[in-house]
Length: 244
Image (cartoon, rainbow, N blue to C red; front, side):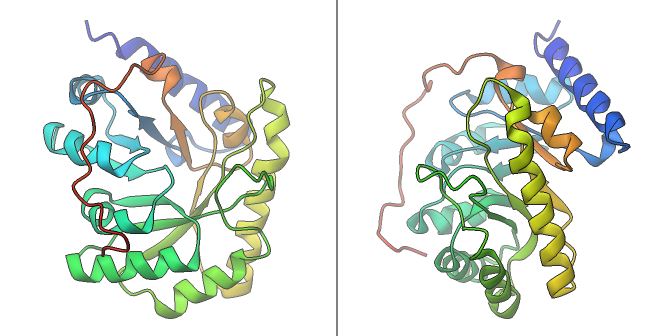
């Protein structure tokens, strides 16, 4: 028996229950299975168990893992993206959750045009204001949206992302998730656009995130257990500063 089937079914049941509490359909929530430090063998087992969407934190790790994984898998970048990894990122990922500056929007746009890629992007917002976290401030978000709408042709802006502060009590994350939803609603009204995706919630707080409107939940530990050491050192072939 595939050992990932029981935890996968458990997470799906928890997603469905949280969605029901919020008056939402379970199908409105996408599970992004976070495979950070897990090898392609785990991805293959996950696909066999029924998962199809995977999240990676680092471009260089994904660069060796994705070619060795099932072709049916869909890949999302959920970790911080440095500008000099943009060229690789647009080739590897369908969706990039962690776009946190106007500069990165421009770099990704140039890289996507060059590669003939059309990735979706989410703007990352540092709702909590923690200095250790990446992301646009809520005050800077409208300007970044306006810039993206005015200049991006290869990129599709389709959502927002945030990370709540670490806290063993999931309820403490609720105000941060509610604030991201509020920001999304304000942006949609101001610019008369649709931003259908809210990427928020991880293993410790994804049920609260769903209750507050999450459409993408990024779950690793609840599916795969504790992260192992990386099975293969991730090479980084693209180290040219500012490379597109």
